[in-house]
Image 1: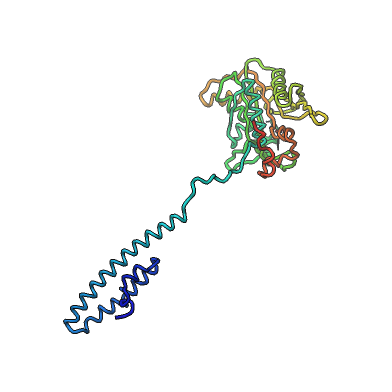
Image 2: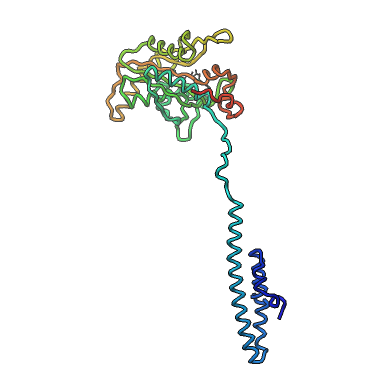
Length: 343
Ligand code: YSA
């Protein structure tokens, strides 16, 4: 009888410390050329009596070995699983790693401030799509087909003929088509222009549009409203200045600037945006769109003022940012400086 069967095979099974070692022992004992298998195979050459007694002994031994191998296998499986689980254990009482702290973007801070100033004057906030059709971005605003604002140089055109809105003014049209006056709204949002960028120009920037429509409205109302805006932004001494200007969707039109009292140096007029009295052509286009949608026309004879400004310029001044491109470069070293500045 060979060594494996001589020194107690059951003890050897018990001594196996891993499932790999156990598999090796199983094959050495019971495999095709294993010790017990060869013993059983050689029974045929023994005399009948001896074959019978040896056969019974070897078969009993095989059953014992198989049972011992299976039991040890089960033990080792449990032990291995326990070991794996304890290695993978999580300490749920450990504090979580700190999350990096964010903060509102400086443009968001200025937009929040603008919303607050206008909401205090009773304005509602309105929104519109950033992908616009020509009708709302240009035609209905009295910007005819030959107008230079439609040039490839100024506008991102989509293949289907739509545009990335070049200003927030198309929301004036959308709002008027959907609502009857009187009302007053402001529209904060992103706009896009195909521009060479520099320290004061970006291809994507923000605007805030304003529109008031009622029975009797004048340039004086517009100026009073913009003065409130300037005072909300720059303090009670702020003043507003108009300079005649041309925008196809207003008549008369003006650019407006606010006097900014610089606490650290000489004050200056800060160009904020464009404004004017809503052009009768715009009201006519809106009424046409309303009729096309089965609504009653209601803008003929109404009056309104509108304005549009760039919050980027205000944020640059407020936070002494020398280059508009810093706002959108997504550089955390720049943005981290504004943490905690929002309201
Ligand atoms: C005018 C009259 C109204 O009744 C209503 C609205 C307007 C504004 C008009 N829709 C408009 O877009 N005028 S604008 O081309 O002069 O832009 C308005 C403001 O946006 C500018 O005063 C400036 O602050 C900002 N702006 C324009 N181009 C910019 C820009 N900011 C950053 N990058 C650019 N490329």
